[in-house]
Amino acid sequence: MASYDVIIIGSGPGGYVCAIRCAQLGLKTACVEGRETLGGTCLNVGCIPSKALLHASHSLHEAEHNFAKMGLKGKAPSVDWKQMLAYKDDVIGQNTKGIEFLFKKNKVDWLKGWGSIPEAGNVKVGDEVHEAKNIIIASGSEASSVPGAEVEIDEKIVVTSTGALELGKVPKKMVVIGAGVIGLELGSVYARLGTEVTVVEYLDAITPGMDGEVQKVFQRTLKKQGLNFIMGAAVHTVDKTKTKAKVQYKLRKNDEEGSLEADVVLVATGRKPYTEGLGLDALGIELTKGGQIKIDDHWQTNVKGIYAIGDATPGPMLAHKAEDEGMAVAEVIAGKHGHVNYGVIPGVIYTHPEVSTVGETEESLKEQDRAYKVGKFSFMGNGRAKAVFAGDGFVKLLADAETDRILGAHIIGPAAGDLIHEVCVAMEFGASAQDLALTCHAHPTYSEAVREAALACGDGAIHA
Image 1 (tube, rainbow, N blue to C red):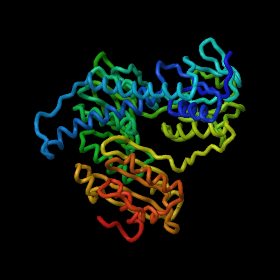
Image 2 (cartoon, rainbow, N blue to C red):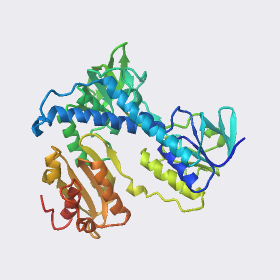
Image 3 (cartoon, one colour):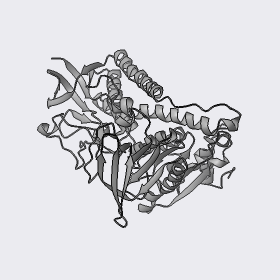
Image 4 (cartoon, helix red, strand yellow):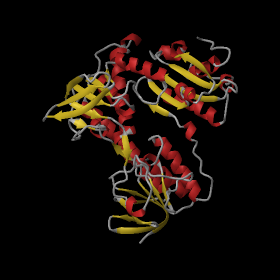
């Protein structure tokens, strides 16, 4: 029986980062993983492979629509789907092997197999039981089903995001159920590859919880790119044959029924915590109504010595949220002060244009009855963006009406996923919009749009 200071169950972004940080802090550490490769859903069948396909399909779009404008003439490239998948798999391999290297470098033991917790202080992997002073559950999440509908997933015709990354061929028609991040990212990949994509969403707006103005502009932009939307529609059945599927839905506003035929149906209605087989019931670990593991301010469950982080716990299901929690809980166990600022966790949608958000929205501030001001700047006024055909979108900055402290930001446009972080840093330091406006930004860069939005919170933007 091996003995450790810490055993982490799950090697996704939360688990592997936590394991490395524990080892750096001098704790004898092991990480349990049943997949053949480390990295969890994110690196194997999620964030990383989808970004590879987004990049490949966007490159095709650039060649088809913008190369000739720049004087790059010739036959547009065709799609070699098999090679595109091989490129995606190579990207996955580089990343997962990188984590394996980091484990060896930091002397983290990989316990290969699926883990369970027979009792506090012990983790069972296969037939072996290992002792641990501290156990951290980082088991992640899995795709959830369509609410109120019986849908059989086969990962060939009716697929989750996992199957959508491994299709045998590019489909002619695809129905995406759910207009959240996963559905829109993968839907935009296939739309650029020539698929007729229809998104069916239960609510009246895409990307629930996002800034309302961003939602409208984002949906309009995606429509221009060829995505069709049926909003306010409840899917009640998905019937499947050997080669196709039929989606039947009912509009919430008038109960009008409709149906769509497709070669592939992507179920993208969110994710749920994956805790099956861990033995949480027998341990008496408390869960929320949604099946998430309840934790205290130090990420500890109601059972002493057992912690939980990431998608298995309450909060946004984001890889970087899990990473932050992984580092924080490692610090707590090592006797230091772990910290996660849940008010400054950015969200990004990696479509083109990208969409990013952090902090409060106008809607949330109105609900709180807080006085605020808005600074907004269009990328049409940004020289760099116009030079690369990326003038669509804007930066919106929200600041306190009295103190000028930055409360949130919402960006739709080029490199939005990178631009949001200067706002995150500013918010972490309690900066005002004026602080950001007075900071010199290099020209010509996309980041100037963030400064202009900050200027718009005061006397006004320069290039608007």
